Amino acid sequence: MGVLKVMGHIAVLIVFYLIGSWIQDLFNLFIPGSIIGMLLLFSTLLTKKVNVNWVDEGADFLIRHLALLFIPVTVGIIQYLDLFTGKSFFLIPIALCSTLLVMVCSGMVSQYIVRKKEREYEHLNRDHNVH
Image (cartoon, rainbow, N blue to C red; front, side, top):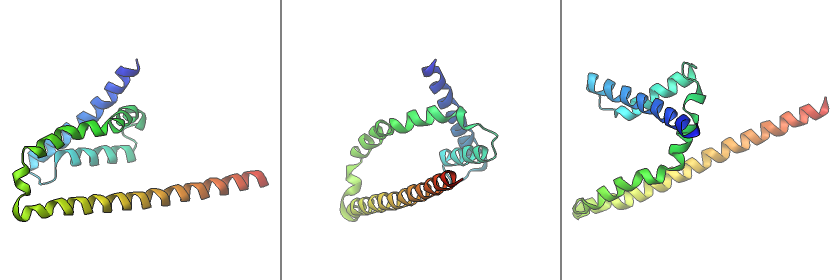
Protein backbone atom coordinates (compact mmCIF):
# COMPACT_ATOMS: atom_id res chain seq x y z
CA MET A 1 0.00 0.00 0.00
CA GLY A 2 2.85 2.38 0.86
CA VAL A 3 4.58 1.86 -2.47
CA LEU A 4 1.38 2.54 -4.38
CA LYS A 5 0.80 5.67 -2.33
CA VAL A 6 4.30 6.97 -3.15
CA MET A 7 3.79 6.10 -6.81
CA GLY A 8 0.50 8.00 -6.79
CA HIS A 9 2.18 11.03 -5.26
CA ILE A 10 4.94 10.91 -7.85
CA ALA A 11 2.28 10.58 -10.57
CA VAL A 12 0.70 13.83 -9.35
CA LEU A 13 4.11 15.51 -9.53
CA ILE A 14 4.64 14.14 -13.05
CA VAL A 15 1.24 15.47 -14.12
CA PHE A 16 2.28 18.96 -12.99
CA TYR A 17 5.56 18.56 -14.88
CA LEU A 18 3.70 17.50 -18.03
CA ILE A 19 1.25 20.40 -17.73
CA GLY A 20 4.20 22.78 -17.35
CA SER A 21 5.92 21.30 -20.41
CA TRP A 22 2.69 21.55 -22.37
CA ILE A 23 2.30 25.23 -21.42
CA GLN A 24 5.92 25.89 -22.41
CA ASP A 25 5.40 24.27 -25.80
CA LEU A 26 2.05 25.95 -26.35
CA PHE A 27 3.30 29.48 -25.69
CA ASN A 28 6.91 28.84 -26.81
CA LEU A 29 8.23 30.16 -23.48
CA PHE A 30 11.90 30.33 -22.55
CA ILE A 31 11.13 29.13 -19.00
CA PRO A 32 11.55 25.35 -18.70
CA GLY A 33 8.37 23.34 -18.40
CA SER A 34 9.56 21.81 -15.14
CA ILE A 35 9.77 25.28 -13.56
CA ILE A 36 6.31 26.18 -14.86
CA GLY A 37 4.96 22.92 -13.46
CA MET A 38 6.61 23.58 -10.12
CA LEU A 39 5.10 27.07 -10.01
CA LEU A 40 1.69 25.58 -10.84
CA LEU A 41 2.07 23.04 -8.06
CA PHE A 42 3.18 25.77 -5.65
CA SER A 43 0.22 27.99 -6.52
CA THR A 44 -2.27 25.13 -6.21
CA LEU A 45 -0.77 24.20 -2.85
CA LEU A 46 -1.05 27.81 -1.66
CA THR A 47 -4.66 28.07 -2.80
CA LYS A 48 -5.35 24.61 -1.31
CA LYS A 49 -6.66 23.28 -4.64
CA VAL A 50 -4.18 20.42 -4.13
CA ASN A 51 -3.80 18.93 -0.69
CA VAL A 52 -0.20 18.61 0.45
CA ASN A 53 -0.97 15.03 1.52
CA TRP A 54 -1.44 14.16 -2.17
CA VAL A 55 2.25 14.79 -2.95
CA ASP A 56 4.00 14.67 0.42
CA GLU A 57 5.42 11.14 0.48
CA GLY A 58 6.31 11.15 -3.22
CA ALA A 59 8.21 14.41 -2.83
CA ASP A 60 10.01 13.04 0.25
CA PHE A 61 10.96 9.92 -1.71
CA LEU A 62 12.35 11.96 -4.60
CA ILE A 63 14.30 14.27 -2.29
CA ARG A 64 15.80 11.29 -0.42
CA HIS A 65 17.01 9.82 -3.71
CA LEU A 66 17.90 13.10 -5.39
CA ALA A 67 21.61 12.26 -5.64
CA LEU A 68 20.78 9.27 -7.84
CA LEU A 69 18.96 11.56 -10.25
CA PHE A 70 22.14 13.57 -10.82
CA ILE A 71 24.22 10.59 -11.93
CA PRO A 72 22.99 10.69 -15.58
CA VAL A 73 23.72 14.43 -15.72
CA THR A 74 27.22 13.91 -14.37
CA VAL A 75 27.89 11.11 -16.81
CA GLY A 76 26.54 13.31 -19.60
CA ILE A 77 28.97 16.10 -18.73
CA ILE A 78 31.90 13.69 -19.07
CA GLN A 79 30.95 13.19 -22.71
CA TYR A 80 31.43 16.94 -23.30
CA LEU A 81 34.72 17.52 -21.49
CA ASP A 82 36.05 19.34 -24.57
CA LEU A 83 33.68 22.19 -23.65
CA PHE A 84 35.96 22.97 -20.72
CA THR A 85 39.04 23.67 -22.83
CA GLY A 86 40.25 27.21 -23.54
CA LYS A 87 38.29 30.06 -22.00
CA SER A 88 35.50 27.69 -21.07
CA PHE A 89 37.85 26.41 -18.37
CA PHE A 90 36.59 29.33 -16.29
CA LEU A 91 33.22 27.57 -16.08
CA ILE A 92 34.66 25.23 -13.46
CA PRO A 93 35.60 27.89 -10.85
CA ILE A 94 32.39 29.78 -11.66
CA ALA A 95 30.35 26.63 -11.04
CA LEU A 96 32.26 25.92 -7.83
CA CYS A 97 31.86 29.50 -6.55
CA SER A 98 28.17 29.64 -7.39
CA THR A 99 27.61 26.26 -5.74
CA LEU A 100 29.42 27.45 -2.62
CA LEU A 101 27.40 30.68 -2.64
CA VAL A 102 24.14 28.74 -2.91
CA MET A 103 25.20 26.44 -0.07
CA VAL A 104 26.12 29.37 2.20
CA CYS A 105 22.91 31.28 1.42
CA SER A 106 20.76 28.18 1.89
CA GLY A 107 22.46 27.44 5.21
CA MET A 108 22.01 31.00 6.45
CA VAL A 109 18.34 31.09 5.45
CA SER A 110 17.62 27.69 7.00
CA GLN A 111 19.38 28.68 10.25
CA TYR A 112 17.38 31.92 10.34
CA ILE A 113 14.14 29.96 9.91
CA VAL A 114 15.13 27.41 12.58
CA ARG A 115 16.03 30.17 15.07
CA LYS A 116 12.75 31.94 14.35
CA LYS A 117 10.78 28.72 14.88
CA GLU A 118 12.69 28.02 18.12
CA ARG A 119 11.87 31.50 19.42
CA GLU A 120 8.21 31.04 18.54
CA TYR A 121 8.18 27.62 20.22
CA GLU A 122 9.87 28.97 23.38
CA HIS A 123 7.52 31.95 23.42
CA LEU A 124 4.52 29.65 23.02
CA ASN A 125 5.74 27.35 25.80
CA ARG A 126 6.44 30.31 28.10
CA ASP A 127 2.95 31.71 27.53
CA HIS A 128 1.40 28.28 27.97
CA ASN A 129 3.22 27.67 31.30
CA VAL A 130 2.28 31.11 32.70
CA HIS A 131 -1.45 30.59 32.24
